[in-house]
Picture 1: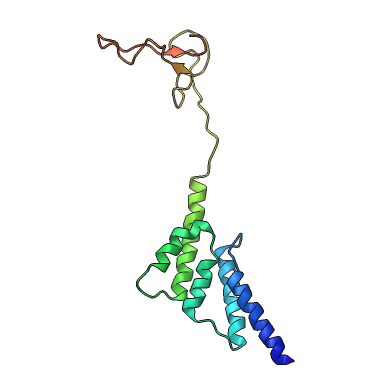
Picture 2: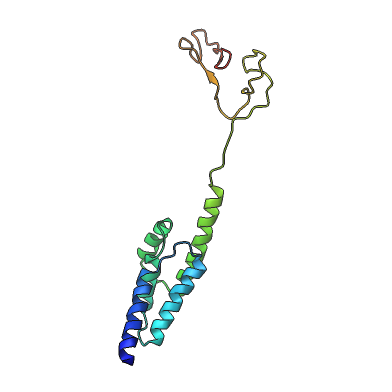
Amino acid sequence: MFASKSRARIMQLKLELKTTKKSNLSMTDYLQKIKSLADSLAAATQPIPEPDLILHILGGLSPEYESFVTSVTTRLDDLSLEDLNAMLLNQEMRINNAQISFSPEPQANIANSSSCFNGCGKGHGHGRGRGRVGFTRSRNQSVANQSGARSSVICQLCN
């Protein structure tokens, strides 16, 4: 009876190890969960070899770690579990910093001008924005006419 429970427990631990995903866990929590499962298997006389444990860890990472996983699995030299842990913590920090740096923020074309770019005197507020929003050239105008003089820009709001 005891042996049957031990086998069932070992199978449960192996299955849990195989199916554990990082998901929303921090990298520290994810690695701790994997380590706990590996330690439980070792205590049940079923230790997981380090290269297999590394593959379990990499297999549970989310798609944002795909390039990292590729770089680790194509290495020619051996990687220790300790080195992998340090690299994963560093990679998590890089991903978090990139998400903060590149998070989309609303942008607006705001102008400090009280009159139209063309000098129409109307306060459209589009004279010094971040782009050319609000301006078009008429169909017959080009950037420069035949004599080389610049053409004027037409305000879409007041023509």
